Image (cartoon, rainbow, N blue to C red; front, top):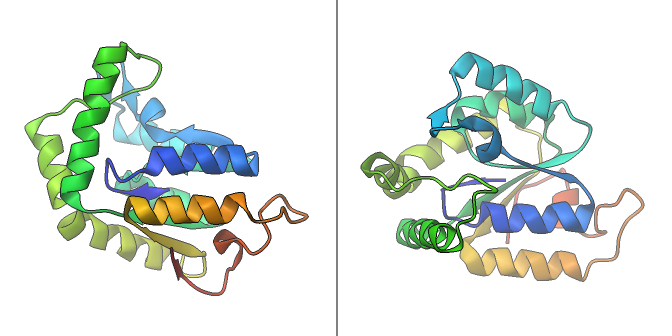
Length: 184
């Protein structure tokens, strides 16, 4: 599950994990050590290899510096495109709600000037890099591009009403067609 912070990756990842009966791997929960401090790159890459080597999963997080390790292990890629201002709004609201709820069970990114710039520049700088890495490391991997929160809702409705196939993936699912990229 790839896209800008605040695009809806966690929401859709949680749904897909439940719907498909797959383990949910939230990369934020592994990358950030207490403090919060970023995991050193060499340790991070070794951990990502282990996480991607698990038998089945829904992996939530873009972390473009480790996409070369994750894309080849993925059966499908879902990319959520969203307006940068909508993403920033959701990031701010998520942070405020986490403080209000005093929820420490999962990591919530601090709102720093660096993080705000990252979110605002994501469509122009990071998104092209992510698509370049997908093309390089997973040219035959099915890619579903979901446009905005409405696209996420539409995909969820579509998957909720699809009958299960023999392998657990909903029959007719956009995620099951390896021949082409889809837009939802």
